[in-house]
Image (cartoon, rainbow, N blue to C red; front, side, top):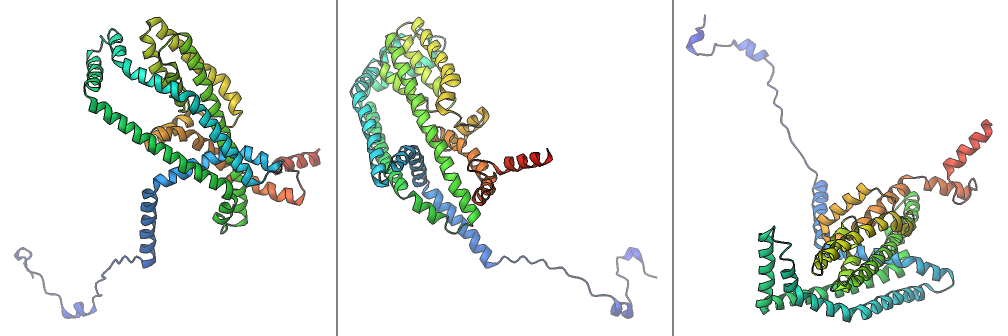
Length: 387
């Protein structure tokens, strides 16, 4: 009998050891095919490449939006027998002439008022001192910035250089975007055929139905935004001029640009107008505030529904979410591009998941007329038979 407390292992008879099963050893081996590794590396390489050229992709995206905005008048000219190249050149030239005319009209007074605003900034700060007494820290910071800018010419000079470099960069980028837009207008059909050459017939049909819908939504948004921005700019200029607020053209330009930013654009434009209005009197500032707020309601509930005419069928929550995402990704430019992108998403979902392909087949077979929905036609036939 073996002593259990001794810690020795009892002897196992040889017969039992011979008949005992072999121990099962489990080896886990993970094998990744070389092809899978190559695909993963290729995916990371493509993502890195796209991230590297994100600036070019953004310019291409803006050019596509610009091309979509100019496409409807080009299509009208083509339908009237004008060659496509001539129609593109005509529309692009007209747009450039209008833009150049606006610049020619407002450039000189805008420059003058901008210089006046910079020169009068210390005076405006002094006049606003009484309003800022409740927050002395804020006033000290503003006064310090104004004083340093006035006393140190290098600060002002560096600011002018930054503005000049930004202006040159913006002009060159705009020129590149315009050239890309012209190429898209001229070669868009060939590019689309090349991009969809490997797709199935059903997917190609969806793509070719999606493009006109996207053009309609994007062009409707851009044209509508130009109208609303111009209306707000004109309203701000007339209001500020009547109230004798300094630099009305500069503030009106700020209002027109800020109006393109959904939700927060009008409040952003209201703040500088009210602050400059305070330099005249507090009554003028209050009138400016009330006028801007009343105009915002007029634009939201009267002007926008009539200008866009159902083009932007998205909820206010979707607009807010799009603006937040766009601002986080691209700053002010993202906020400007957020609304057309958000408006395009429902169109993509409707066309890609809708009944367009069955409608096309039914129209080709002569079962329904153009513009009629196959689901509604089938329901009508069933109702007639049942009746």
